[in-house]
Amino acid sequence: MHSFFVDEIRQGKAYLSKDDFHHAKRVLRLKDGEEVNIIHAGVRYIAKYSISKAHAEIIDTLPSNEASAKITLYQAILKGDRMDYVFQKCTEIGVVEFFPCVMKRCVARDADNKLKRWQRIAKEAACQSVRSIVPKVNMPITTEEMADRLLRHELAIIPWENAEGRGLRDVYMGEKDIAIVIGPEGGITEEEIDMLGVNTVTLGKRILRSETAGLVAATGILLLSGNME
Image (tube, rainbow, N blue to C red; front, side):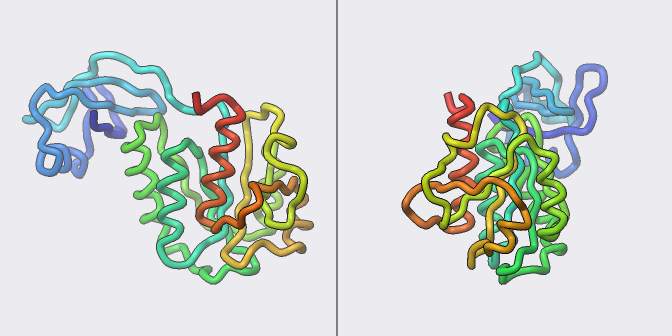
């Protein structure tokens, strides 16, 4: 069943955007009366698509499928299209917010012109995975700005190759608001670790790529919090 995020529901009808209506009609070739998922203001509905009009008629409300653990990913900006993978896959598993970060060893730094692309990727992944929300993709921030923001979370962790003897099970105690910090291709520096002042954890004996580490850490938190059952 296909999913659409809409900005307006009026008199039991969900109005698709021009682009979504074109996609439904010309690309997906949905049939008149075909059932679709509609998401509006964090609520999911089942609706019947109208091929002649840019709307779908609401049938019923569906339960939320969002995780109880709200994960924010602070991801160092990566070169090439690796960030696309991060936004797509981490959206699919349930991350609720992203902060691209400019860190000391980042090869790529100028990411402002990619923000709209990343937001589009997150929205497409949210539709594909039938999320109740589209994760927010924020403007890039510095390490100093990140240090201030991390204080607002119940738990903040940094998967780090030099962390020993302490894994996710040792630091996660059921918190609902979790921040995960992932360094760049060259790794996060000890100076940055000290500046951020949060828990470092190991994700095992293998060294993971930066674009993989956030996905693994987020999946681990979701598993420990009972959101993978």
